[in-house]
Image 1: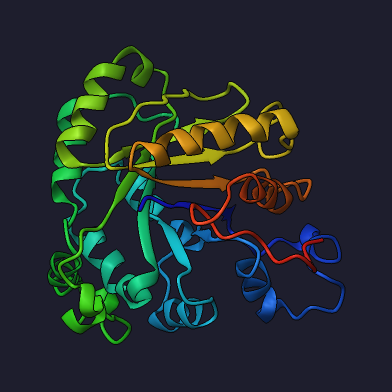
Image 2: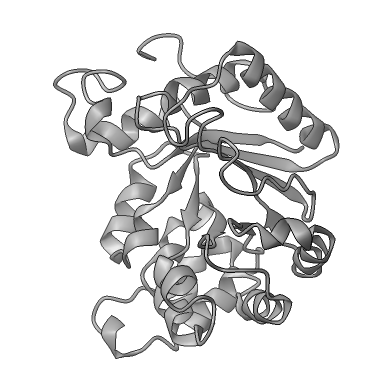
Amino acid sequence: MAEARIGISGWRYRPWRGVFYPKGLRQADELAYAAERMTSIELNGSFYSLQRPASWQRWRDGTPDGFVFAVKGPRFITHVKRLGDVDAPLANFFASGVLDLGAKLGPVLWQLPPTLAYDEALLESFLARLPKTRTDAAALAARHDDRMEGRASFAATAAGAAGDAPIRYAVEVRHPSFEDHADAWAAVLERHGAASVTADTAGKYPRLDRTTADFAYARLHGEEELYASGYDDASLDRWADWTRAHLEAGRDAYLYFDNDIKVRAPYDAMGLIARLPRPAVMPPPATGAG
């Protein structure tokens, strides 16, 4: 049965303390608190730097059974290398401990920079390099470079019992040329089974609502003001309809709120979760939600 995974992009934000997070809650307990109220969280620390195996293991062990993380791929690959010459960086990324999430590893998100225009050959080459299964990812990780010596975790056993399970990928684009090549881009994604991210960015970046994989992925950055404005009841109703349409078609749906500046993201996520009945998504607890 298809299921919805709804949550927030990141969880460690100072303005949330004393608002979403109760006063006095230890910073170390914030992930557990958020995870009790969401069904997924997008890990974005991996976008800024390679994480250590101990961190991946701590996140895995600090969340409930059945919880799922989406993992944001490194900006070194997307923004610095710009998807080219990435064999070693990809190996280093998977060697950093991603597979230690085990059954809690959900889709890997690649957010492309606003300056990266549509380049079909480049995009095809990049997507073809991504490991298709967890076993493939462990084999790729074993080819990490010297910078990972002494800090890598990539044994095939890290893939767990689901070693041959596929790894899902989603791609968020931000250059307007992708709108001009929307059909061609969708075809590229379909060939590789990757999802086209439906991004709500207050009109700043392209919004390509295309189905290109066996799951759907949306990032909600703010309807009227990027990273700041919240979603009212009517907006949440529309996103609930979007989610139900994918579920009814047999596709899992992942949605993450990234409108964190004014502490709207966690409440909007919980509001959307409440609109989707079991078993599509687990509701938040009745108490302590803010």
